[in-house]
Image (tube, rainbow, N blue to C red; front, side, top):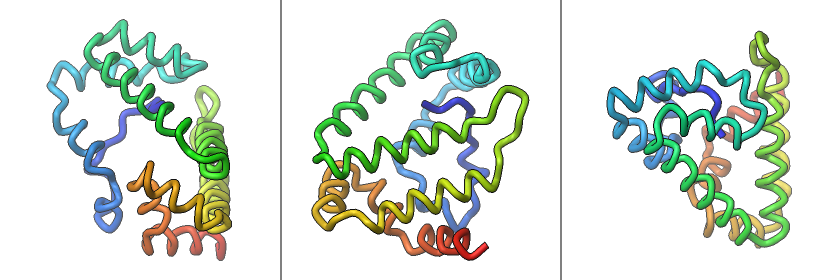
Length: 162
């Protein structure tokens, strides 16, 4: 779950083409009220211990946004559950690693930890069997495309060489 409100315009120009169209469309479709609700909701991110708590807090702010978020989460879970074991394990472990990056209340994100997670995910992706990669490509084409993207590979390799 997204605990902070990202700014699509803040994504460096060379990586903007990697932002999924669905995400771009979601943010461009937000009304002023939706944006205000998200900003208010995001202010409480440190108090949300679980995704369910975060969704409940969003529901209290804006039911329509909650319904969109809950539907997206359910769709994502269904798609993950449809994967073969190797691809499913890769995605679940990657998600857990990313989620673990969430800093403690009052702390800032740790760049060293972020780099380590990016490198770890990249390395695990490169170790997947061709069948698992094909499975990911069929179910999560954008995710697979991002992980196979030359810019992302250069970024991850740059982190490895730091």
